[in-house]
Length: 360
Image 1 (cartoon, rainbow, N blue to C red):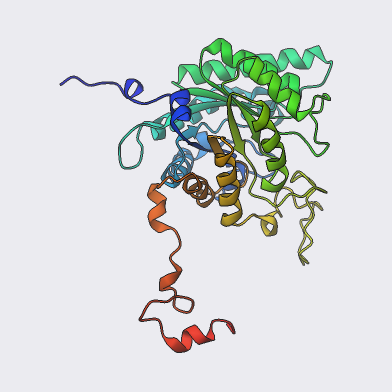
Image 2: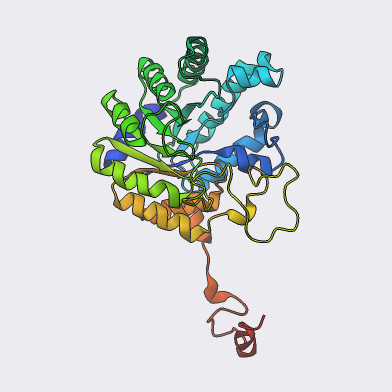
């Protein structure tokens, strides 16, 4: 029998984007922390070494919900962060383990069919300092080794995400391009609504496009309401494919990112550190309909690379997928209120229970 390799059979990123939506789940930090496999605040993804089965199951859950891209969980798995926690010796094993797990899930899609894409990941270093060439050289070394490991482990594309310095985003793109893989570069401006090195959101995205990024857009830090206005304007000027991956939190004009988002819901037990970020954001979640509406508008704008970042659950990813018209394995289990014991309209629903619904 003549077997054709999975790599030859599956469509690559640009072909898929040219044909329709590509759904990507990312921002696994919050979800894996809630499952008990990661420390909030520290946010280092040791799970790939300590509980690989938990990470594999997480990827499968997002795959079931409609994610076409299995993004390796290497966010914050760079050399500097590993130095902070005193585990630099585990840097390469951690990265390779995360990539292998993502590759395994991507190559075995639920229900068979076309394999998913596996993405390597580099992101904000948090040591980049404007005008400091030493930090720039260190970031270049960190990004280069992570990209090398991603290529070695069979990544189909490389994601550079959550950049709030324009120059760091440009460096990430340059390193990805040298690897010869498709690039997705997304920025995450802070509350000043400008990159920290003074470049406007519009200008950094235009520059990324001019430098040859395959996909340009925004991710993280902002919820739908404070990301969408920029996406509308960017879509008017960018000709390349665009990405939109917001947080599932209700950020506002007064507080455009989730770092200083207040809880005005009368919380009786605030976080001991005095902020809602990162462990007391629960009352500020968007509901599924808000995420659906964001994804629908984004898709109608012509943005085909869609997902949700930190705080994403499989439910959110299903909403994104369905907002583009896709039916995914998890669609089988979407809400069906018609059979609810009190709010349903099934002929077997007791009338006295229906009448009680507004009093319950």
